Image 1 (cartoon, rainbow, N blue to C red):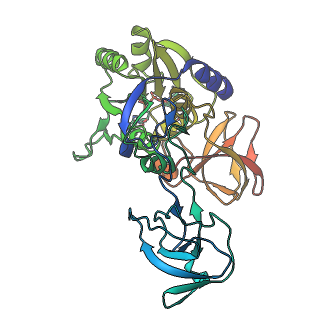
Image 2: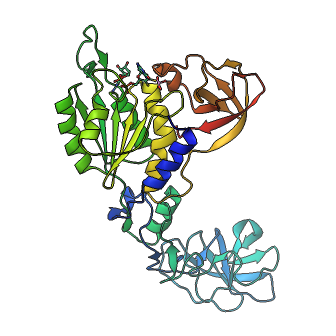
Image 3: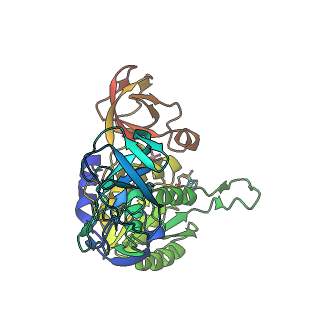
Length: 392
Ligand SMILES: Nc1nc2c(c(=O)[nH]1)N[C@H]1C(S)=C(S)[C@@H](COP(=O)(O)OP(=O)(O)OC[C@H]3O[C@@H](n4cnc5c(N)ncnc54)[C@H](O)[C@@H]3O)O[C@H]1N2
Ligand code: MOO
């Protein structure tokens, strides 16, 4: 059995960036990373733009100006101003070439067709210069930039409709187990509703990985081999749940061996998630997550998250870990390092009751995992604890 740190290091060393290109429409490009440098096709702003509702002035020494015209946002109209003349103007409108500055209307008195400004202003005051944000042909965003909502807005403002981005991995989830049925049926004795695939799908979607297929397979060696073989060949990342422990009907390990999946590690000294397996077949990364739901999800956040980030060529791969003050007492059972379901708020963290790896309710109300290392036997109220913030 290896340590958590060794497992994470092995994982980081074995999952390589996909570095494949795909094209997305700007509406669907959120969460992707730019595949190449992107240059601006236009100046932004594309014309000298008023930053205020007010008056564009052709400056002179006096505070009084003759009002000669009006320019609204969207107008192509460019009145010609002489010294001492002003035009009414609005935020976002094109400032006439012959205007030097814009005075906001709160600082202007209008008297008939004249205006009096409160004080003198400098040239270009309240005018956004042509190409202030970016100029035609200049670098708009560089390769690798994450397309956040702000980046999508920025690129859209430049008229960019399609972008080349790094392809995200195609992912398969395989739920194994004879006991699993769909919720469309009444629950026969001995069966349970299958939930891990939906849980992992939700976790992937929340991280903006949408290319996901779900498969189910019974506890049967031949069927497991056949299913894993096709799924591994067709995907970049495979997440299997269940069937990886030592029971007579746990066939995942045997099937992976038969398919010559290279074991990178199996069994990690941790709770939950001890029987975690990670392996590779050519470029495909394969996790066999323990079937217990809380173990599967903990392993997703601690390990699969890193693999996903590596595939997307991100370096700062792990979830944020912070120090927080415990507001609960907790007696740790056993000597395995433990990830404890917890609620974090404003520097304080509450470790919840019900830490068994089958306890889904506890996880359902958690937003953090407290890490208790091997040496810790008890966490007391007010102790400082290492807390992993979950992306929920
Ligand atoms: N003799 C031993 N038994 C077990 C050990 C051990 O070291 N020696 N380890 C235990 C630990 S720790 C874990 S974790 C589990 C992992 O077992 P598997 O990965 O083989 O998972 P299963 O046995 O198939 O399932 C475990 C549990 O989870 C439920 N499950 C499975 N899949 C789903 C699903 N898709 N949706 C909802 N629930 C699911 C399943 O019904 C079981 O209750 O092994 C221990 N045993
Ligand atoms: O590793 Mo298991 O997840 O403790 O139940």
